[in-house]
Length: 620
Image (cartoon, rainbow, N blue to C red; front, side):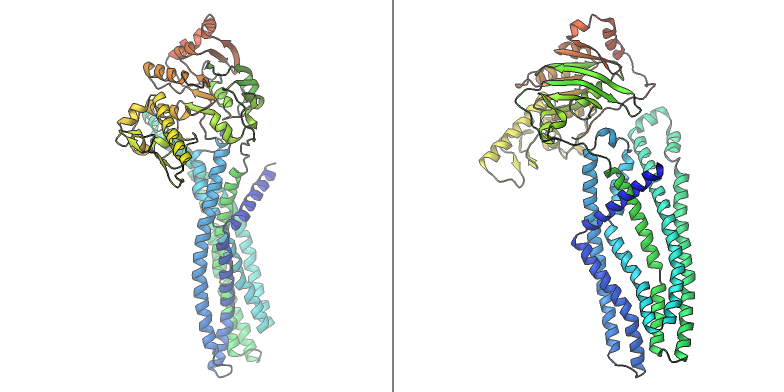
């Protein structure tokens, strides 16, 4: 079974290599033409030099030295063009592979993407994609590197079959050694990259939790944990360089002996009158050209690394992306239905078990329950950040799986406990996914976007475009005000133009920016503990603004606060992945077990004793 998986893994890598070669486009073709022309010139040069020697002895046309000089010039020109085409083709292919890999990663279900540590994915995107991008130049140069030995055999055969037999026997010995080199080096390179990715993944985890590690005083233990695979990395690296050194040593030992054999056989042929002195000189040159297999060893080593990188990139690309339908939503205001929804963890444990829930349009439903009850998973399923393993989720009567990506993105908005802010400026972070025109520049007056002066790069200045820009600017201000983040932004020197990386902010301010981003939702607003870092007064202000939305969109709020549950129209009470109760807070409050949910959440939190599902945030 493992062997079948490994063969499939290699097949995916080989397929990606073929695609990478095609990605080079005209540059790969140019490289191939230049390399072939250069190889042909190299093969003709020894013959031209031999005829030049005979010409010096007065036996042939005296123009052959000029022909030899012309071939040298051609070799230099094709080598220069090959370097240019190889570099440009590699850059083009690498860029396309990185775009493809990144797009595929963002299209994956978060559960599938989470199987790969972040550091490992960064390594594949930055390192292995670059290795794969060299596929075109590596294959072309590998093919042309094999031409001199093969051409030398043909040339020697034309001079004297005895020379060809002698040279061919030596090449056969070298070929056997190179075949073993490819096999051993491929396994070593794949193992090295795999361990390197694992270290990168653990290092990223450690950096993410640096404050916790420092507070616990476990820095040394964490260093030991991250670097634990170093002996394996060293073993794979040692195997790689030992294999390369062995192959180079064989080449270095056989090549001089092969040339000596050609000199001996050629000298015998000269004494017997079968060869001229110039032909003997050409034979020695062909022997040196064909036996110089150092370039082949280097090319094979490069090909091994390229193939190993392609296999690691292909492994991620083989993960099936989330698919979308083509349906759009009918008129409505966000009626949400979960029908027999079941979700399993990776270990087969049910996280949600047969959830049946109906949320009327325009209602606010609070989702409560103890830690591990499945609240965040229900929130993820409700907006299709995660597909249920069984059952169906419908919004205004349409299954979420059937909606187009655009329809889903505009209908559903998410606010998270720890949002990731994406964009160069605060305005871009807030308007992400809102449908605002791309590259919008918000003209400001006293720190606020001027709804009459927003401009859009490269967009025609039409009347409708102007109206759209003003509407987008007005929406930006409105959602920022609703999320109670407008005053913070307006105090910044550059207002909404402030760059995120240069804007220090607290956890609550970042949370409010993420909340403002989610308020562009047209049908369903899902807040997964999105106000946990806010004080009570600010949370009340935001809740009032959200509830006052003119379209009365539906709101699903994951919360631990009794005030939020009290203000909601309905409360969904989860316990152990099951829906224990649905109804107004005042009715559920009569149950002591329900009251205990809020009592427990008010106590200091301790470290969980079992596996806990992390908060989910993804780009749909």
